[in-house]
Amino acid sequence: MRSSNPVFSRRGFSRDNGYAGFNAQQQPPQAGNPYATNPYAQQPNPYAQQTQTAGHPYTAPPAAPPQAGRMTMDDVVARTGMTLGLVVVTAAVAWITDMSLVLAIGAGLVAMVLSLVQAFKRKASPPLILAYAAFEGLFLGALSNIVDSHVDGAAMQAVLGTMAVFTAVLVLYKTRIIRVTQRFYRFVMAAAIGFVLLMAVNLLFAVFGGGDGLGFRSGGMGILFGVIGVVLGALFLALDFKQVEDGIAYGAPKEEAWLAAFGLTLTLVWIYLEFLRLIAIIQGD
Image (cartoon, rainbow, N blue to C red; front, side):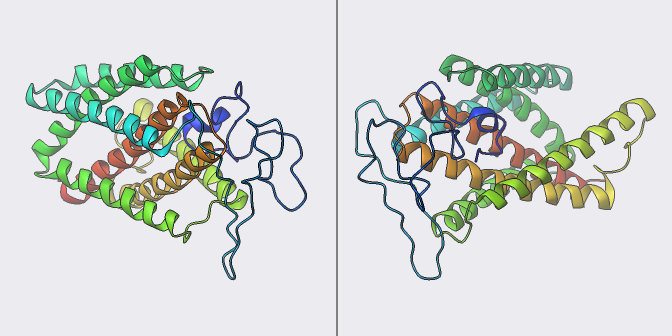
């Protein structure tokens, strides 16, 4: 299983090092235990034990023994903090300087190109990821300033909403109320593909037909699809948490923490933009 995140969905963590996400095409696992072999080890992992309690069918991945050069949760947190921190700093610059909509769109396009380049690279590139974060921050800051000028407090509400979703999903995931399974993954991916296709069709109608296209992003339909977008973002987070958890358990290389940070940043940006759109529709004229 791979995360729904655009970065993770292509290949998970580095295939070159043997770990390709939690549906990697590896050698057949031991019967009854899909996590019984550590792809980084030459022999079965003695730490890999299936943990299952009564009424709790979640099967945890093995905890790989600590090794130098392997990704840890501290690495993921630090890289994610750096990436999101840069987004916030450049967003503040765009807000304070009152960046124009034209420049904001340009920054957004550059950020999109950089994200696609990183998504198709075989290795995580910290300079590329940080460059993406810088341009994404400029886009978000300028866009938030424009929306906030029409709907007072919209940006702060979107930030608080994003933080609330992140915290709620993290708690639900850690307590295993949300269990990431193959069925869960397939459902999220099918819903995401349908959502993106509908938004693409709506955008085409808006560009060539004028107005709000098919109306999926305004009025009552806009509110409905905004809520769906936030829910999808929350589900993406659960898949990303699973991806990171498995990467650490299997001993993914330390540099892959940048890829995890990049993926989490993309998902949080998605959720923030959906919240900002929702607030603009609900509270705007």
